[in-house]
Length: 126
Image (cartoon, rainbow, N blue to C red; front, side):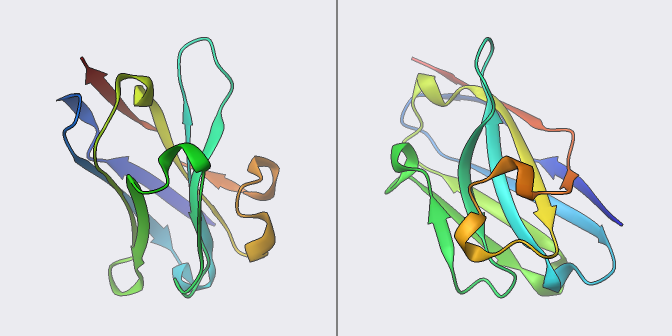
């Protein structure tokens, strides 16, 4: 069992940065693939970024490439999403997800994740 708690969301002006954190409790965090997803009002939840259990492989959605970076610190049981050059269209509720057996090939698949956090709101104003 893994419990995930996101933090770091808030309101920011376009062009600014934010760093989201996802703290995981439970055993064997280092064995879990992790992902970030987001859901804007009236839209479906979508993949943002994922990272394998070692941290050596990452995948980012095309619309965040060059702006967002996922990383993890296994010693702290935490995964991060560094978001730079934020745009108003990045406004959404951001979720952290985890799964122990997820292949790196499927980091972008929501159904592959067994554990989800409650989300942290990011609001970008123009």
